[in-house]
Length: 104
Image 1 (cartoon, rainbow, N blue to C red):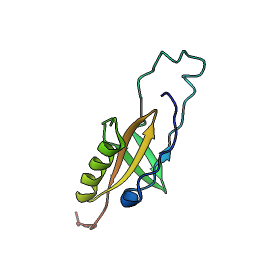
Image 2: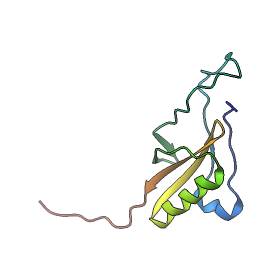
Image 3: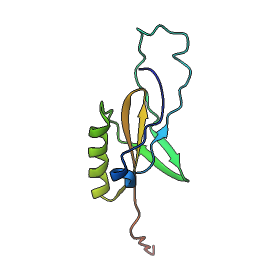
Image 4: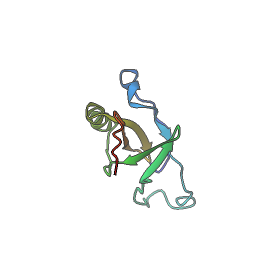
């Protein structure tokens, strides 16, 4: 607990995107192991030049996280999953299918 690190998704879900190591802000350095700070994920992240938004939920298990990620994929989102401090997060981005230009 209290350790940030990367966790790889199972191969069958590799299309969900890479799991990225979260950055530990150093706030927990020197604190007692008994004291836990609340998880404060970034609202956005940039991967490969694309902006992803956190869906606002914290999952206790990787399985729950990947189930939600699969649901977003079915709704035409790009998805990134992240493990942070033993919890799992989903970041999404809408895929642009069609660009409509209108004249004013």
